[in-house]
Image (cartoon, rainbow, N blue to C red; front, side):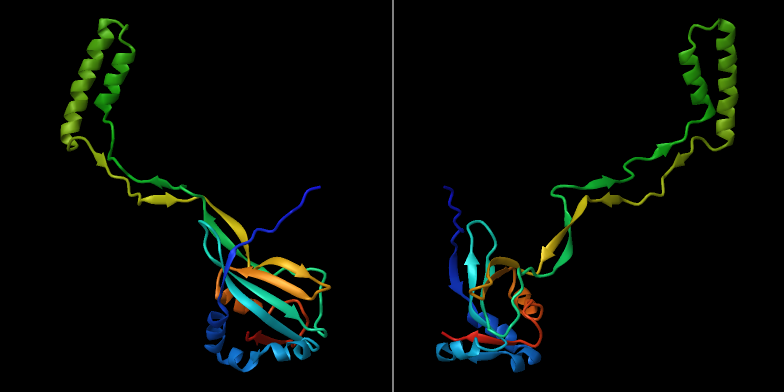
Length: 215
């Protein structure tokens, strides 16, 4: 028989950090209420959401995350599963970079150079052909002097860089545990701001109230 065990991470209380962020927003300041353990059971009888714990989850060699423990009131809607919406993110493939830059000046060949190449390729031709080529070279050198010598062409190309990128779907938060019968939910976030934004889109119906448990 195989047993699957959930990894355990060190948790550090961050409820005050969540509270401070909520109180900075006027709308959340009016909406969020604080209760103690004596008020917990009566609160859970209504259309309410109670944040029991909010902690920092530390993981070896990885970025810390924030975990929210939620209890859902008896009159709130309970879906079959909880999945928060996500956003598309563009990511660079590690180490990918293509760079094209004009590293040299391109030289235009004149007619005499072309003839020299032909002479090299056809070195088995008779002496008469070689003499004709030499005469043509003299004529082309004269034309070259008349035309101002070799022409240097500098390409009008700016540096061109490219990266290999790919898109991923980044969820607002990851559902770690959801128990419909126990009416409990655990969600993990990258930032406190993600946690606050998710409170408006939890799938527990409309107009639910939000409470922070002060323990």
